[in-house]
Length: 295
Image: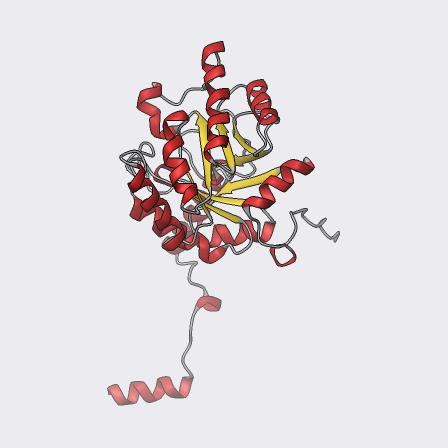
């Protein structure tokens, strides 16, 4: 029997130093691509860290792919912090970024700083991410001024889904594209260490990436960004409600899970499970003793 070829992975976590915001900048300067994925629990974060991913985003996408909400808007700070703590227990090397949920930073600058601080103090994160362009500059300045690294997010911003008229690509007209370029520069000036570009034309994302000294992380924004991120449940085929056009599925685990569950149900119903190898037995003498005791 031939031995299967080893699976290629990133550098093992044990051999790597802790990834920091400085690592992000250095990778851009060297022309090295940054890898990022979402995680919401301990075992997934552990597997990602061992695989060698640069950064893990505890995204508010958990509202849809884990909690079953229609969109990200219902996600609370407490839900985010709960999942952040689980991820922090599993990943020790990747840069951990907590996604600030809807209305945790929009009400006031003071509240934005306070909630951002909770991600580091109570959630075990290394940085936070928040959505929006020029309208978030003051909050970003205040948060970074408090010593908290901020990742920006422009283009398709899911928390603004109602304002945008749905999950639609952004920056497709001259005026809209120019505004995104300006927003990206403003976010860099405000102190962001990186910016997510979501669902924007590839040539626009590449142009923005070249104009910024900080790295861009693309999702549905082409190969010209300095890094890439995907929602892990999309990548693994775990979320069946819909799959964005920009997702590459590396597995179909939802179908595999459904098959395993069906096999289990059939085995139980036909009494094939549990089999003797799954069963604890009692010594015959002890059993006979019990029967005598019971009369």
